[in-house]
Length: 120
Image 1 (tube, helix red, strand yellow):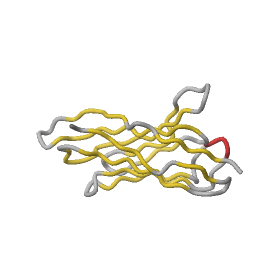
Image 2: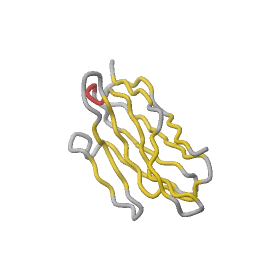
Image 3: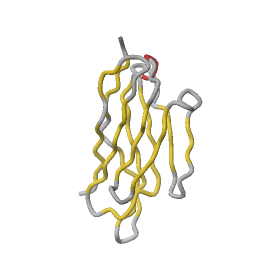
């Protein structure tokens, strides 16, 4: 069964750092593209960062210069490095990935979400 499992969330003080991981399991040959989204209470889910197969990245203006997205196909894992965290970064973070199976079939999957809380 193919799935994405997130880890790395938690409580951090303003100005601190966290690294979120999103690991793909199952018969997966590669992560073609990945996006990290977040949803704060009472707000819509928003795209925070994205990376495509060629390595190009995009970031929301609110996180540019503070967050870095990456992926490691050998480990079948994507990452979101979050630095200089602010209270407004508090949200549940979700990864979404387009995964390629060994058969060549591609599909999109969501992780279960991980809570990030930035507070003193």
